[in-house]
Length: 279
Image (cartoon, rainbow, N blue to C red; front, side):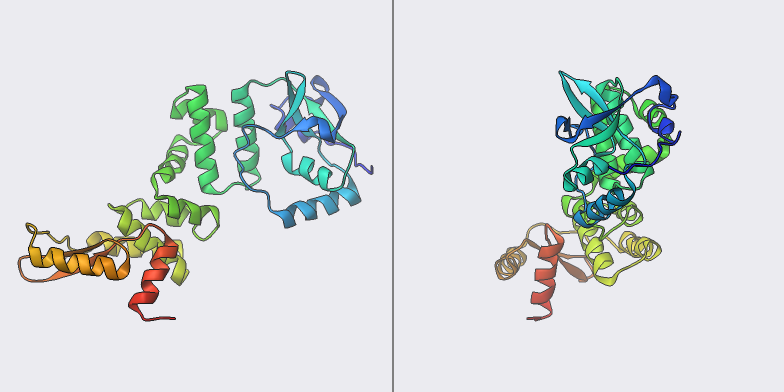
């Protein structure tokens, strides 16, 4: 295996300690296990193949970092390199073996992925939430551990309040963190989903998304009167026709609106096609 000389940059990854204080060994690739606290959920196949091609040509520039638990080695840093080594069917990979607590493992894996910009905002938020739950630390202590401003950490955690379809859109890259944060200003889940669908469909920028949200916030609220049998009957007919919940609302001056509910962007597209008679 062709390999370049390791630089001192690895020290920054392993708690800023000199490399001499850590044990550098060649480990069997098959003896290493994935990080059980890995915040990253998906590894792009194309990117892994590109990394494998680079490693085949230049070797491993930095070793992976592992810890030992119950006689087994688990990754802390370098899961992409380890997966690429598997693609190349390498038998050995250079590794730094270090002692870590479970909290340290979670924190260091999260830090590495954030610094390398390999996590989407929802994965970061879920990683922070898991670290807080496991360590029992507050937001300030966790922010200090991650080298993050507390306000930034709090903003990530707020994203977890978004409806599941919107979080999935962030994971898929259809919405970014700025879009998601703008949507959090809306009062209802229905408004969030409707606005998110518009943002995705029209390809709105974050600034445009913020303006769209402002329009939703400034829209007059309708008051729903006591149940009217005729209104209920019309709601039921529309609900049956569209196969989703429908509400009719109107104000005392006779003006009103129709609310059509949906639980995902895919369902919104279905309703949009029906209302526009698209085939």
